[in-house]
Length: 194
Image 1 (cartoon, rainbow, N blue to C red):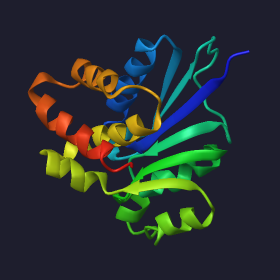
Image 2: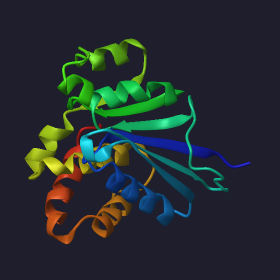
Image 3: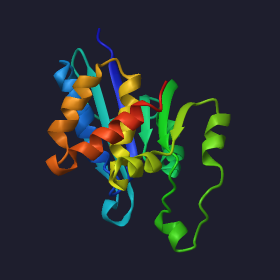
Image 4: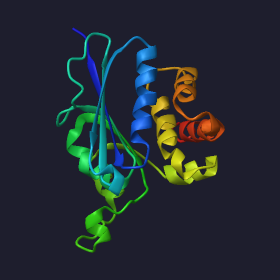
């Protein structure tokens, strides 16, 4: 019997969750895993939620869908998306989140307020959380668009694959003109997890 591992990437349209899932998928495929990726789009063009499921196994993966309480790791590109995805996290799972706040439409229109102190509320639930200002690190690397690669850098320290495998996947998936920025973003992300 083979174990199936589940990773969720959750964010807001335009944050690069799909590119991150492609990088992760390439890493897993290069290591001989059976990998299934499923993209669930919200209104991504309007800043809506975007969710990607990545499931992998050394046996066979039959479905890419991650169900409640099944995710081994959740990578959240934004605080509110981290909070929304918590029911999907397995007991003992790990949450990696960007501390950035992106207001959803109800907040922008004034129908709701952005919740306060989300990260500390998650910590109080005894969740294994890594919260990093990935936007600040992406800007330091040269582009605010590199948040996704900062988060992949953090993930690369948690998963049992060599750094070179991740760097190869990065080179295969990011535009050639953005390689040096993304390499810096990846390294800055790796440095966040000791």
